[in-house]
Length: 337
Image (cartoon, rainbow, N blue to C red; front, side):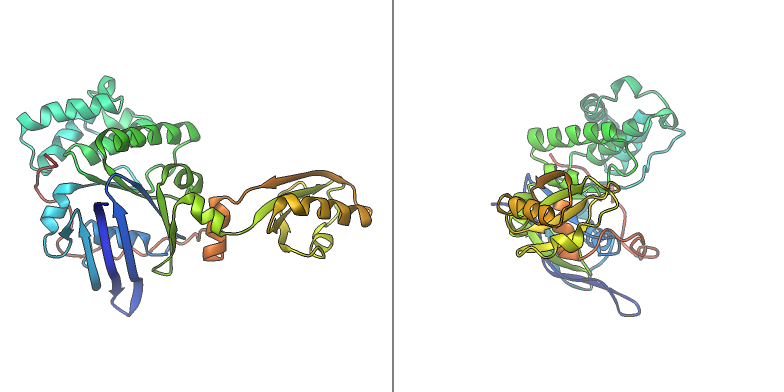
């Protein structure tokens, strides 16, 4: 298996002794969609900044497409694309003009850039809006333009940093349809961070969960969920004022019983849902509590995330340590040939 990204002991310590990334070992295969998850402040942005040569590591090593990110940053930049959380397009220019500028910054001549721009505009369904100012684009169109900007130089590796933040469900679905097509037709490697765990679950070939600057789990979505070793049962009483938790916690094998929504329901984590449902019903019957519904749910990636990190996504964002960092930003280089 050829590797698109390899890191060994990669870490970053900022002035003041702040370890944003402790020691990370990663191996991302060429052509796979790799999900990278973690709470805000876990170190995701810092790690991506090191992999994309925006930030110099404090220790360890990292190779992108077999190239050391510290020794040969310009060569790395020729091979990667990056789609940021927020739009980087100039609203006063047309979609085509934005892409022409980006192509030039990547070293493509106008003659070489012209057919490539036409190709990406057509692929991302933007040809009809190419002469419109970006300020008139919808949210979904802007995200597609961001992908176009990220791949205009034909990179073999594309970093997507929270790319669907702020999009509605329809816009998210359309965005990911284009990403799947890009990966399937061109074999582009995708390195993805997202707060939408359902996206990571359905899109990623493999996933790593990061917290406090360290990778805590890595595996396929299915393997991570299976390793959780428990199912979830949703129990809802007919009388919403009844608290089921004291009753359910007396049942042997119940791992967790917590509120499951505004309807008075309770989420119960058990080792095997099928065998525990009769016990739950019997316990509630013995307590003379009428149930409105009992349903079983297999573990989700959300459950895995909470089990691994111990909490939901934190609100505070990762500090921006990139100000004043030398040797960052795309160089004038060509894309993949």
